Length: 145
Ligand code: HEC
Image (tube, rainbow, N blue to C red; front, side, top):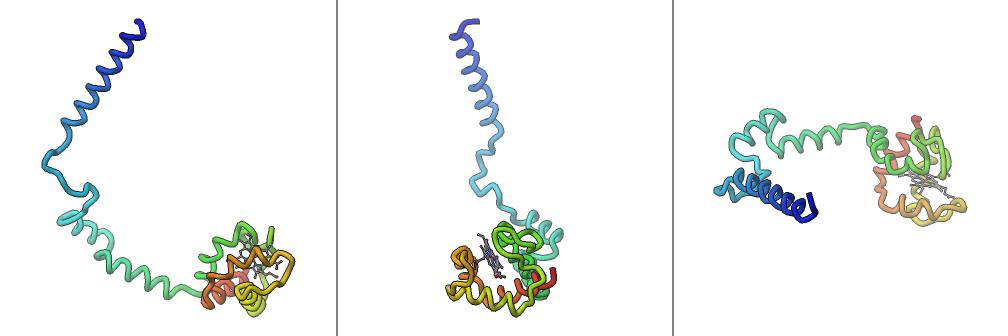
């Protein structure tokens, strides 16, 4: 088989595939293909314990009821790279077991842009967006490690 007939065969096969594909389309369908309305949504509600608003409400309530340490553990995800998975230290110092008051004081200082150690600049962008609650939660988490 020479190149020309190979190309011709390829064109025929691809055209055939495109044709087969178009035969499966429903010409009446104009909406968003991901829509789940009517029976589909009723089924979803049965499976998930309520409508979207209820499910979201349940999630928020669970989050509000979580302990400070549990919330701190969640926030700690972004600290792992530098302070280690168990806060045992790495690029940054060991945090595990430090008293909550120390952790709170140190993070509050970084958040205020104060210089503590020689690498404080690494902590400024981390501490800046933290709320008081975030700091308390982190302190509760690492103090218990
Ligand atoms: C990019 C690396 C990096 C990330 C990410 C990071 N840290 Fe740090 N952290 C450091 C370094 C480096 C120091 C030492 C800074 C200095 O010299 O003052 C430090 C210091 C600290 C200290 C003071 C420790 C002590 O005993 O002096 C605390 C508390 C702290 N980090 C908490 C956190 C928390 C909580 C997070 C996550 C929300 C976090 N860090 C994320 C690098 C990082």
